[in-house]
Each structure stands twice: as C-alpha cells, then as structure tokens.
Image (cartoon, rainbow, N blue to C red; front, side, top):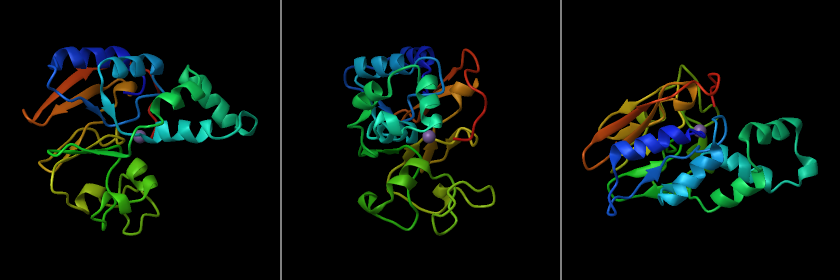
Length: 211
Ligand SMILES: [Mn+2]
C-alpha cells in the first residue's frame, strides 16, 4: 500500500467486504507514497489485520533509538513519511511477523527455506527475502531462485515485498506486490473465490526503487 490511500479505498469498494470477511494486509503500508497516516486510518477503521513489513520494522527500530542518534538518512526517512515516526511506530508496534489464517499464511516477504516452523525462521528473512542462495547471505540476487521455489508450505503463502517480480499466481504462492506506489496496481486476493482484485494506481508516486 505504501501510503496509497485512494487506491486502498477503491480496492475495498471493489471487493465489498461483509461483516464475516476478514481483511489482511501483507505489510509495508507506510512510506514512499502520499498518505501513510491516511492508510493507517483506513486500515484501523476497516479492522484490517496487518503483518509487519520491513518499512514498519524500520520505523520501530528508529522509534527505539534516541532522536539525537538518528542518522541523516533516518531524518530524511521521517520527512518522506509525512508523519511522526513515533506516532506511526505506536500504531504498528503490535503487528505480527505472520498470520496463519488456516486456509492461507500471510507474511511480508517470504519463508526461510529449510525450516518447517515459523518460530525458527529469521525475522530478517521473513521481512526481506526474495531469492535464496542456500545460506541466507544474499536475499535478493538475480541468479538465485525465488524463495518459493526452495520451500513448500501446506497452505498458500500470501506475500508482498517484491514489486519488481510483480503478481505471482501459483496454487501454492500468491505474490501481491504489484507496485502501486510506482504507478502500477494495488492488488488483493480472495482465497475463497481464488480471485484477484486489481486497482490501477492514480499516478506514479515514487521513483522505482528496489526495496
Ligand atoms: Mn517490503
């Protein structure tokens, strides 16, 4: 979502949730885009469950660091956020690293290959993996296979974090980051219908970046 409040509102309207639906986000709701606070307002109002993304994790780390010790880069981060790091951190501090919904597992980036229990997986990998080198040293290398080609899970794994890869639609994995903030699309997936809901971005809010 990355601050794309208008597209999130459109996605919700297209899906038309009823009171028995459970809405879940794959994380990275803030930063980069035009309205991070507005996205959080909408997410709280619609009672959308969220897993932590690497951008929320970054905010939590900053919030735990005394202001005087922030780097220049971190100060610029708050400027881009368009909201107070401490306030946003307060709103995301209880988000989990994954949500097991029974018929799907939701995680921000992906699973750590070679591990069968989520509790044993590295937090850093859950938040940032794209590819797997067999060791977990380089988590994003064009010559290495995608993480989801190196592991299996009993239910479909729904993830974000990989806008460059775009929509992944396999029986066992659903990759939903379709780069809305870069001017592409915001995508949702309904497991019961096995249907995607896709909303075009109103504009390119941020230059293409890899993270
Ligand atoms: Mn991410």
